[in-house]
Length: 196
Ligand code: 2AM
Image 1 (tube, rainbow, N blue to C red):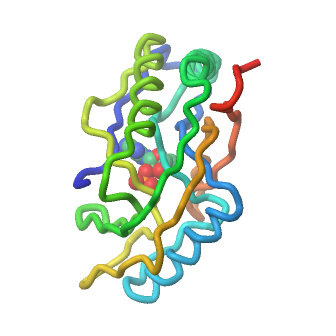
Image 2: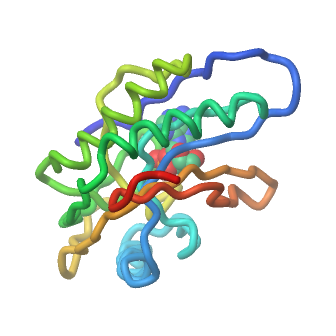
Image 3: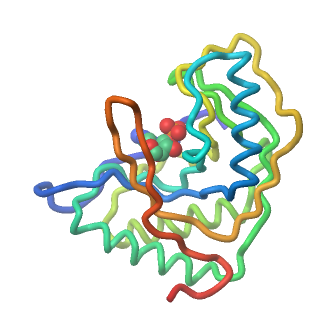
């Protein structure tokens, strides 16, 4: 994994209120605690700013600023993707930390690609594109940002792999303020059962 996640402007009308939206895997409390502990250990080595424990996530597709009247289209696209992936729950094993010098992000990720994760990302992207959302075509890089503005001379390791049982995904909204971004989960789709 070498590059940041793809992004591009979203199609749709330019006027009116907008929301900064993205699809993500959102960990349960147990996984979030493991990620938060990894962030604490990495922070001791690299400094920077730790992500809030309740903000840790793995982005699947970044939509950027979406006009409020297009949010429903994004949700419908996600429901279609979820319907086609019913039963595709999987175990994600985060077994490494990584550091991107260009944006000074320290992240947790995996050194082997997860086929079901990539299937989810591809399926979601396909339905979003069909709905008119313009996603960038750069390769997806699975990562959970742990630290921003980090400076790592030597990359710390993970004490133990983090096992993340994945059975749903979410649409989240990022609210930017002077004190940084706050995230709000707007909707969750199960991979176990058909969307309502
Ligand atoms: P990051 O953690 O690597 O910064 C909410 O902002 C989520 O969307 C974060 O996980 C962030 O990734 C990702 N994100 C923010 N801006 C992005 C962009 N321009 N391209 C891709 N992903 C982005």
